[in-house]
Structures are given as structure tokens and as C-alpha cells.
Amino acid sequence: MSSSNRIAVIAVDFDNDVGKLGVKTPIIGYENVLRIANEYALSYPQDSDLNVIFTALKLYNDLSRSENPSVEVTLIAGDESSSSKAGIKISKELDDLLSLVKVNDVIVVVDSVEDEKVLPIIQSKVNVVGVERVIVEQLRGVEETYVLLGKYLRKVLEERRFSKIFLGFPGILIFIYSVFLTAGLVTYVSHVILVLIATLLIFKGFGFDEGVSKWWRMSPITRISLILTTISVTMIGIMFYMTLASINYKYDINSIILYVSNTVPFFLLSLIPLLVGRLTLRILRRSIRIWRDLIALAVLLIFHKFITGILDAMKALQPTDIQQVMMILSEYNTISTLFSYIIIVMSVSAVLYIIEKKFT
View 1 (cartoon, rainbow, N blue to C red):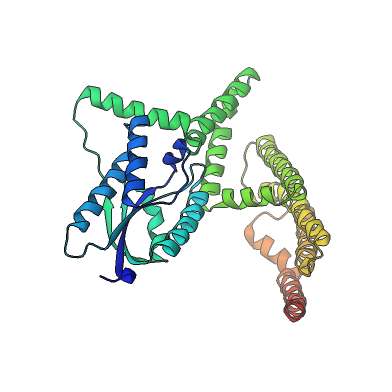
View 2 (view 1 turned 90 degrees about the horizontal axis):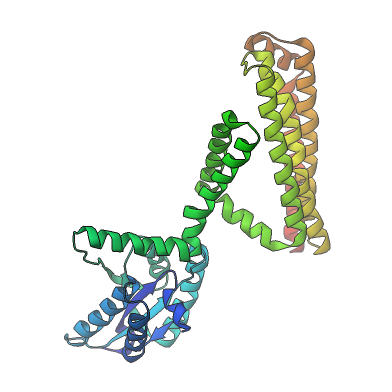
């Protein structure tokens, strides 16, 4: 078999447990990988990543004794802090590996569903001809169950990506309960906790947490704007809840108008620190894309004035059903005015976008 058709057996350590030994990956070659496996076995004999490394070595031996002995074994590792950093690190290590070891086919060895996240990354760079999933055999006894639970408990306590979920968030919930208990507001604690859980699910589900983290690292200006916006949105949430409680959670037309008028305009204004922060950052960087933030700020202010005018009219006329609401919107030409704003903004944005493309 020619060198261009060699097969590489790749052992994947997604959370970089071998990094505890102070070694740098990728590790290439049977002797090097075996040395790391022995060192890791002596230090962490119960870790499942150990089985991945030895399984990769066994596959190497099996393939070496076959008709096509041109095979190599390697070890790559990710990052323990987050899945995103782990994916980026593995992608870079794979590029380094492929530049040193010329292969067209690889066999990937993993030990968990989380480690299988690397498969799309590897498949985008080289042909994957096999995936070996390592399943550690366990005796079915009470003692072994406790050992296994202890192993995962240590992971929760020692690895930050697990401790944030299993320790950090419950700690926040306990803290909130304690504060409300001290203040004599235990009846409201379930509502606050449900809102907090819903917010966490939304942030994680839509990936907002990674976007916020990226923004936070950009510059001190964005951090300050993000903090101000967070404080503003929190205050608006408190204001909304107080409005609901003050009128006994009514849901007639006038009550809904009151809820909206006490929250939506202030929510729109709370977004101004974010836009101003990004605008300031682009001014300092002398970016031609400054027009995007100016347009966004203008749209926000126009929409705020537009919404405020409609809500003031609704509160003055006090409609009693949805038909009267629609009549008021029709009398004030709401739809046509809104479409006019949209057309103007889109036209100006299109012109500025063409100018931006011309100078970049």
C-alpha cells in the first residue's frame, strides 16, 4: 500500500484528560501512544479514556498483521472547558496530524456520545472508514454501582463543564430560595425559579449563551453595554410582574394594553446600551459598517415612538373588545404607516450596503 493510502487509527480524548499528564497532543506513533497510555494508566487507572487509547493500540496491532500493514495510530485531544473550544482544538490538531501523516482513510475510536461530536469535523477533512465505540464492561453488583457513581461524582466535582450544570445552577436556585425565605416572600419563589429555568433553557437551546460569551470577550465597552442591558431587562421583568399583581392578573383588553404599555416601550429602550456599545466600538475601529448600528438605532427609536403613540391612543379611547382595537388601528393608519417605515428603512439600508460593498 502506498503512503498516500495509509490508514490512521485516531483515539479521541474530547475533554483532554491526558492533558493532566502535561503532554501536548497530537501524539503520533505506536511507541509514543503506548508510552502515554502506560503513564495515564498508572495515574488514572479508572478513567474511560484509558480504554479508548488501548483500543486504538489493539486496532493498530490487528491492522498491522493484516494484508495491508501500512497503518498508523494517533491520539488527539480537545478541551475540558467547553464543547466549542474542544471542537476548535481537535480541528487544529487534525490539520497538524494530516500534514505530518499522509493518510486518506481513518478509523475513529471514541467512548461516549459526547466524543462522537468530533465525527463531522473529522469527516470534513478525511474519509472515515470506521468508528469504534468503546463500551466498558461493568459487573452488575451494588458495590460496582457505587464505584461507578463515585466516578461520575468526581467528574461533577472536578471538571468545570459538568460542575457548572450540576453544582452552579442548583446553587443559584438554593440561593434564590434562601433570599425569598428571609424576605418572607416564599409564595413568589416558585415563579422566579420557573422563569430562571425557562431563561436557561432558552439560552442553551438557541445557543444565546455562546453569543453572549463571544460578545463578553470582545471589549470592555461591550461588557458594560451588556451589563446595563441585563439590568434594564431585569427591572422591566420586575415592573411587568408588579403590574400584573396590582390588578389581580386580569386579562381583559384594557389590562393587556396596560401590561404592554408598562413594558414594551421600556424594553425597546433597554436595547439602546447594546446598540450604542457596538456603535462606539465600530467608531473606535473606524469601521465602514457603522451605518448598520445607526440604522438599527434609528429603527429602534422610530419603533418606540410608533408603539408609544398607539398605546397612548388605546389608553385614551379604552376599547372593550378586539374589534374596537382594530378600528382604532385602522383610524390611525397604523398598517400603512408601518409599511412606509419598513420601505424607507429597507431602501436606505440597500443603498448603504451597496456603498459598503464598493469600498470593501
